Image (cartoon, rainbow, N blue to C red; front, side):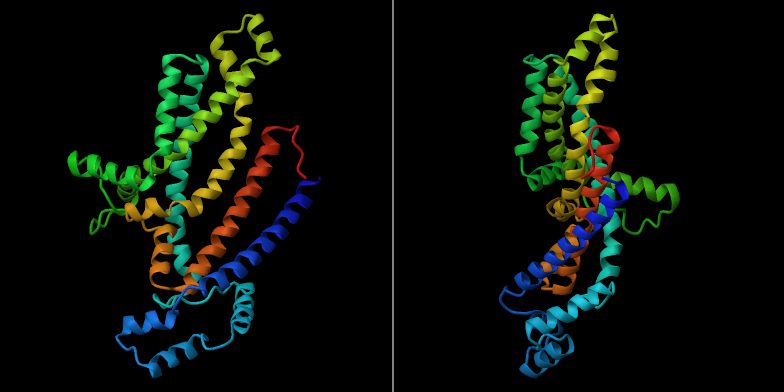
Length: 324
């Protein structure tokens, strides 16, 4: 299938998925008891019926659900995700302000997880059944089983409180007013603990996948032929075994990249990282329905786009794979 035709088809599917997400999220959010007017009235300190009636009329909450849905769909089609009830700002602007922080944290975690997983998986695959293989496999499964929030809190306790090596919370030092490289270094320092916490969890999957793939590729005839030609073991591993074993990792990396966009809520809240995860938590606790809906829409679009990029990258890495 022509690549442009395939991309166009997937973009149409992305629009359909986004539409389905809007429908499901719109009605599921409104199944919760109470409404946003109650929350806003409580925040304002006025809970009388007249004030709440005025709030519902101002935000269109007094209209039937089909009417609310129709107006919301029309606004979304024009790129308007509404206004935040709590922040009184455009939803899209609030999300775009936080999204780079989440993408930065996720990119660090993904790169660290892939690099560490491939390295450790390669070590385990060279001598299956050895003590080193057992240690690597055990540690990877241990980090996979440990809850992320507990691992994050333990990391704060050890490296921030006891050793005082790393900052525990936030994205940069408050009041430091750093600029340029100084600010970049400060952000990188704050990113180590939350990024490593995320990376250790996902690294376990790369260790197992790399180990299995390399052991399987090592039994192929072309690898035996390369060894018979007298090629050094290091070149055999790098050029023949590892290169072919990395092909399945491309698909898995793309899948994890899409999961990370909306899957770092716990870690972001543990470390007070100002990303989309903490924003989603604030929207849930504040009953900020437009903001929560906007987060669902933006993350669903990003997930679909990540999957599209993964499919294209897979076809480029392995020409035998056809888009279709």
